Image 1 (cartoon, rainbow, N blue to C red):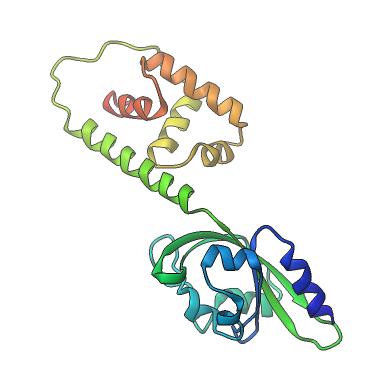
Image 2 (tube, helix red, strand yellow):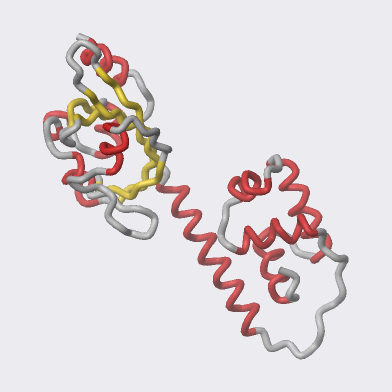
Length: 217
C-alpha cells in the first residue's frame, strides 16, 4: 500500500522519476521518464537499471554496474549528493541528466527502494563543452601570438577580477565561478564588466583571451 502511494506521488512529478530495489531492478517508471528516455514502463519494469542506462561520468568512465555505488550508499544509510550522468536513451541516443536520490523504506515490510529523480541537462553540458573549447582556443592563440609590438597599457585588474578571469579560463560557468568565490551573480557581472572596460573587450571570452595574452592571469 505504501509503495503504491509512493508510485502515485512520483507520477505527479515533473522530473523523470523511477525507483530501483536493492537488487538494481526497476520497480516504477513515471510518464516523465517515458518522455525523457523514450521507453514505456511496460518495457522497463523489473529490468536491471545498469543494463538499461549504461551510465558514464564526466570523463566517460562507467558508473552504472551490477555493484552500484548509489545502491551501496543507500543500503548503508549514507547521503548521496546529486550528480551528473551521461546515459543511453532509446535508440542509443546519448543524454546528460542530473540525478537526485531519495531512499524510501516500507516500515512494515522492510523493503527499501531507491528513487531516482532525473532532469535533462544535455544542452547545459553542450554549452559547457563549447565554452571549454573556446577557452582552449583562446589559450592557444595567446601562446602562439607573434606580435612584436607591446600591447597598449590598460588599467590594472583587481585581485578579484583576476580570480574571476582565471576561473573562466578554466572553463567554469559563471554560476560556478560565483559559487566558488562566494559572490552573487550580480557582483560577478560587475567584475566582468569592469574587466571588460579595463581591457577594452566586449565579452568575457575576449576578456579571458586578452588577459592571457597580456600575462595578467
